[in-house]
Image (cartoon, rainbow, N blue to C red; front, side):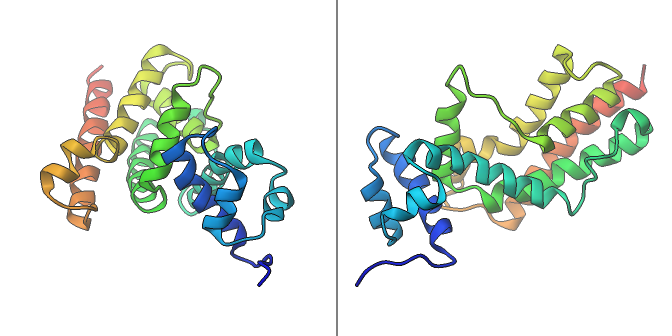
Length: 208
């Protein structure tokens, strides 16, 4: 029976491509393999993306679109942090980090993490995330520095590492815990540790 386009075909292609690209790399993965795994007609790749490279880029774009859509429930990106008080930004940063944990542990698969880690090593890879940029601008307001200041960049980076390190380093988390996934109690601990780091930054700023 001929495979036809349906409402879920795009999602299935993205999911299949993510798994195969993570496991076999870009060059080691064929369009035919992706379509077979996704159970769709091979013409669907060109219909949605145009080719394999565009599909590969589409995986990252899809993640950023999901992140942006998710952020709309708790974040107003049009509001300039420079016009907000220190306390407002402090509360907002805690909210953002809390929501980041929820997003990272429910929307990003292990295969997608592998793919993202590979992309990070490419010298021309640049994260174009309005949500991450906004988070950095909030940190800049709290530290009273320019958004491109080295301290701002590193503080934001360390904050994000608090969020994602348990998943990026499963040998030091899941395998030590003797489980395959993170439970709600684990996510609660991760959130608390992120808040500890943020509160340390806030305490340092208040003391100046």
